Image (cartoon, rainbow, N blue to C red; front, side, top):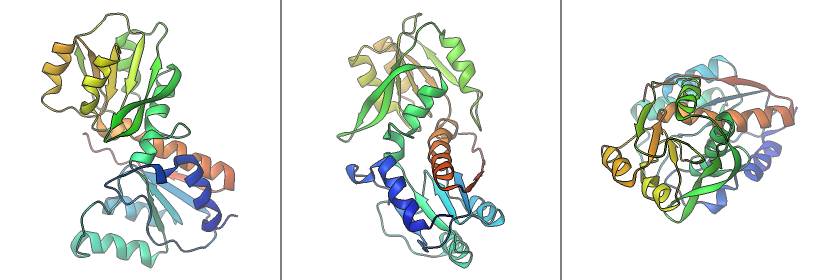
Amino acid sequence: MAQLSAILPYIESLINSQKFKDASLNGVQVGGWDRPIKTVAYAVDSGLSIIEAAVAKQADLLIVHHGLFWDKPQAITGPLREKIELLIKNKCTLFASHLPLDASPEVGNGFELGKFLGLEELSPWGEYNGMIIGARGSNRSQSIETLVEKLTQLPGAIKPLLLNFGPEKIKSVGLVTGSGSFAISQAARDGLDLLVSGEPKQEAYHLAKEFKLNIIYGGHYATETVGVAALAKKVAERFSCKVEFLDEPTGI
């Protein structure tokens, strides 16, 4: 049974968080007790109900994509205080990874979503504030309808929104999970046939139409379940931990 101090460097080797300038405080956000890790829980978000579920599962480590601390100081009051109190009382370490987990070729949301969709020749793609945080891949023969159907099989899936303004035959696909509308112009510039993301902005409709680009929005939550799952499972396999998925879909 591994100590936390052995697990954290392994996680860092997978996500390489030092490369990223991020609003999120990436890494251990609460806790960091160097104790044996028996159970690893993972979730997209770090809501109070998620932390309560982690404690109920007796998790020693909770890995999330959306953590508690971002780019502004926060008063430790109200629900935030409750969450921190619960983690500390039960010695459950909270580990968060935002952009590094989006981008990682090993366990990242973009690459894992590409694998889930059956894409090939995956490579880094999707620039955000000077960082590459997504992926692109090639599609051999799947129709856009098939790709839409696959997205409905993700945990917490919503009915995907399809903006079908591009080529009928899909050969090249860009993947930026979560809120990835910023990548529309990049997808058009790079001659991609399809962009897959999570949630849209209002401008996405006209941009897709004007750029003659296909876009599928499969849900912010659903498209970001894949990275935390891949990371937690690698940790569990490497260190013989029990793993628990705390699935609380938001419908967004």
